[in-house]
Image (cartoon, rainbow, N blue to C red; front, side, top):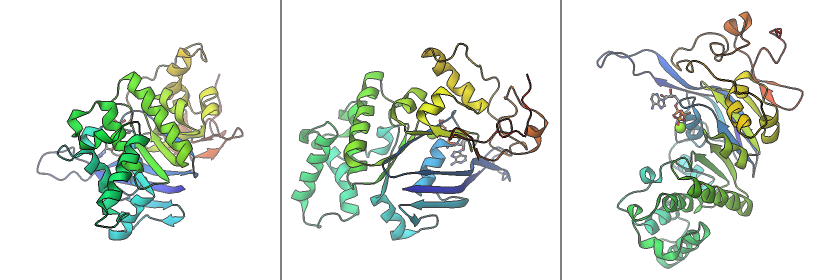
Length: 328
Ligand SMILES: Nc1ncnc2c1ncn2[C@@H]1O[C@H](COP(=O)(O)OP(=O)(O)OP(=O)(O)O)[C@@H](O)[C@H]1O
Ligand SMILES: [Mg+2]
């Protein structure tokens, strides 16, 4: 469904004085490769600022990549423009964390959901009644009802607003949804209900999800496979069970240890000391070396490549590929 190869997004840094251009680059996403199969749920996890949202937006070309390639449903979409770029939206849609920010506050719910149907000309221009029927059907599909079509976003609860965002995203029957922290703004009970809605929709419509979340319990509940991101790079990938039961990369082990301790799958928590490295001009070597309990000489000198491990995980770590001898 989605194949991403060596994808990179650099932003201009905005560090120095107001009137002097900062020549440095923020390497928000830096050489990332992965794929999402049809109907598969792939979660992207990692600390704030590691590049998850940038990656999600690149994947469906809401952002222009600096380099690398993206194939969506077998078509190279890396450098599409204009009408061809708009057509991607029939295959791939996005749901954001904050439905308040993504819904037009002056547009009724019905108009917001009808919008993608109209711009993509899925119905005849004069076919208002058919569009209205489709909007009602979509509202029911996400657990709302026809009466909600006349409401404005501020008249709804957070959970209801997010359902409107979901109805709008699925209106064109996409095959891939990028979900960027879609439940992070909701209280726990609304989170559970919306996650279950995502599960139902995925089963019934056979969509693939690229599910971005900083919440590991959400990833564990939703994902078939998990991508762990650190400072613009993927550090480990693997099936959900394998990753939760036996994380291999030292960063994944630290990130997952709190969750594993809570569920009784680990006996002690690994505390991650220090901050993630600046995405501006990162140091050479492995980006995790400043916080890694196992880091050795090679980790400060050479960047580890993503390699397949015997158990089907992929990991980018010298320790795991034998370049660093395990000490102790
Ligand atoms: N438009 C931009 N211009 C410059 N830097 C940016 C821009 N957008 C994001 N960044 C930087 O790129 C890096 C990755 O940001 P991104 O929003 O993708 O991270 P994230 O993993 O989604 O974080 P969070 O969990 O907080 O949502 C950060 O260092 C961020 O400050
Ligand atoms: Mg984000």
